Figure 1 (cartoon, rainbow, N blue to C red):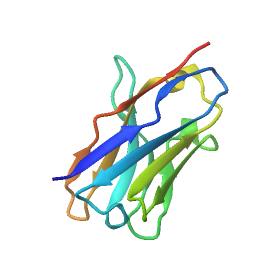
Figure 2: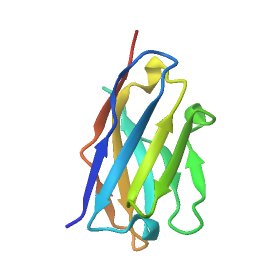
Figure 3: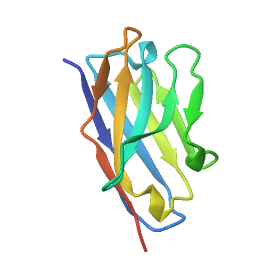
Figure 4: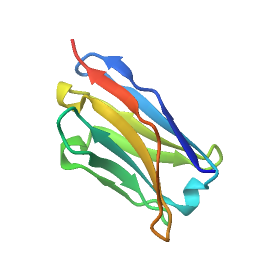
Length: 117
């Protein structure tokens, strides 16, 4: 059974930082593409950052480039999203997703990030 468990969300002031974690079980993250998505109230879910299963290449949503960094620790089977210089528009429910080479997708339950003074 595949499980993705996100953690690290919370309330932070504008300009602050958070690091989200996605701990995987039942799946090996180094063999799958991993991504972080977010969904704000009334908006569609959007891909924030992704890392490929082979080579570790990364891609980012334009609005987070230079502020967010996706990484993975294969030994811990965990993917991270380091978020710096957070802004109120980054407020959303953040989800982790694994996509197998065959195209199967698995989602975590999400962790809330709120950026507010």
